[in-house]
Length: 399
Ligand SMILES: [Zn+2]
Image (tube, rainbow, N blue to C red):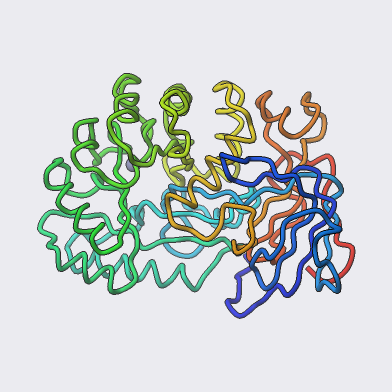
């Protein structure tokens, strides 16, 4: 379990001979460029090799005409501490997920902590501790944005101010705690928003014994920033109610792996029908009863593209640029000034698809040949995906 040292810098990285450059931007999903230049973890140039300053790199990578895309963002995870999940008593799940192309994860609450405190002082302390712990520990280099308190009855505006002042930027899923009524949730979500804390609401039936139903009326009234697992986690609202949420709310439409797959496709298609595909973001909702899914985001991309009949290059944007924009992250797009978080992919060996995008459209997941976070190589050929046909080669320098 490699841990990124905060002081480690990539120096100058030149990535050349890119065959397909996915931008993460729905409005321009494929870029006409073959070269990306990085300086100390930040993209400085994207273009044709002859137009970029490629001199004297510390690291030169030949992508061998394969695909470069922004690192995938999992909008909905439940970390606890370190690279351990008590939900399935599994070690190394975050590093394993990095082998599935995920470079950033967003906590929807550290809800699986054994003995999780539910009193107000305790839940605030846990959130602040989780935020600090994951800020300085990156399993496999993955950026885990954690410290997402589960709100409980009795919290006051001052509590949200204190959390924000202490560096907390997220709420855990609204509805997992004792605040389940729309009016009460709306008040607290508004306090959170006032202090710059983003909110997500649980949508649908109970996840596990002990949690409860959040129906469409509560979701609409609470007005959280993200309609968390709109396709249920696991049990979904009816397709009609999910479509109504897409129509009546303007908030993020989060579709997760650990939800209802039929409704996942319906929600994505309905967002496109409503001309608001920019709101669609993807998560796994793992670890959960369904376990840990290192390839969960890739599987969502293949599901929505193949059975949902949505072009693969657009679905990749759901898991990258859309999430970055809705979550205010400096990653998720291939453009100068953004974090150099990349996944290098090619069509899996022996897929029926003639190229990467065609293989995804046919329902196959890609093979990952390399993952880079902040310009640092975090894995070479993925140990979890099917093998990529071609993988990038390091021409010079150390990775
Ligand atoms: Zn949930």
